[in-house]
Image 1: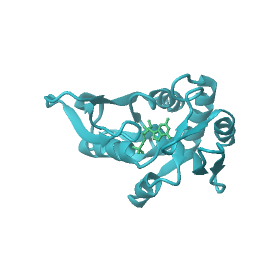
Image 2: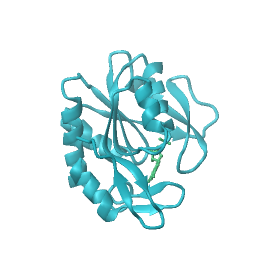
Image 3: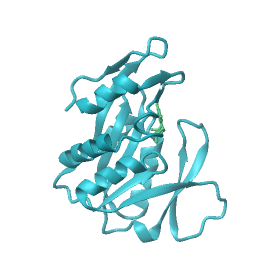
Length: 195
Ligand code: 5GP
């Protein structure tokens, strides 16, 4: 998606440890006009697949997920990160290792909000090693719901998550795939064969 790639080139900042900061428009301050366009693009890519629920993970996926949900006219559920030891039985739980913090969280969704009748589209801001997305896919499976696919704003193509998710046969659509980025020069190269 050219609009997003242009914005990443203009305002993204490459930091050490393969981290791209997009705080000025995506995951601290949020450009809701850009989110609306992203929502439309995801709608186009997953049109006609019967999506009736969007699932994301707190916190930075929520804004984009809301824009996508608005296009589909369906609710958003966000999985919650918790460190609580005693989790009640009315939730589905998976463990997810955080790319940015290096810690392991329990991630939960109330059974009330995800079930066997649901056709779920996963949405998140970044795809790096794929732990977050894999955790969300496991929650869908635990609920007996159907996984339609996953929509990602920014995939870091030089990390392993994209290949891992595609190998599982999950329909993955990323709006911008970064082939390489250089923390010294700030240069960002995108994968070219993109819609
Ligand atoms: P994964 O589980 O795929 O390794 O990492 C995905 C999660 O880590 C995303 O939900 C996102 O919040 C965070 N993340 C991964 N890489 C980056 C990055 O380069 N920049 C930012 N801002 N967040 C990232």
